[in-house]
Length: 141
Image 1 (cartoon, rainbow, N blue to C red):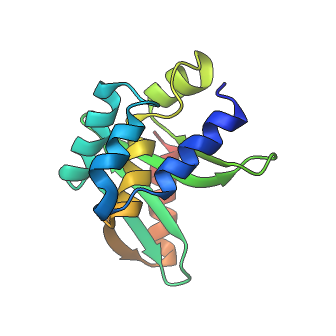
Image 2: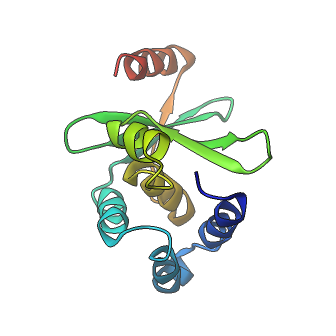
């Protein structure tokens, strides 16, 4: 498990990620992630694979269209210690982040966090019933 200090440092880098600082920020992200994961996350953004379902009451729900499946991403969770957490329903997150603890996050979470900061999420408004259907589908993954 990465230390709270490392997570706080990554959070600072992500918070500073804007369209104006993209080149510098990508260089900083190379400290935290392997090149393959970073490029895969950027590729997901380039392919418009990060979808933000937005409700009338302002609650976003994220999905990332992967190469073989669609995954639910929860980027705004808080830990008991107060730092930000994220979760993804993909197998890579379960194995690399939770079980073996070899990665801080999967490409889907990273793509979601970067797409948020770059305003590159595909926004789709949804009703309460549509959101319920989306959540039901995501839970079947």
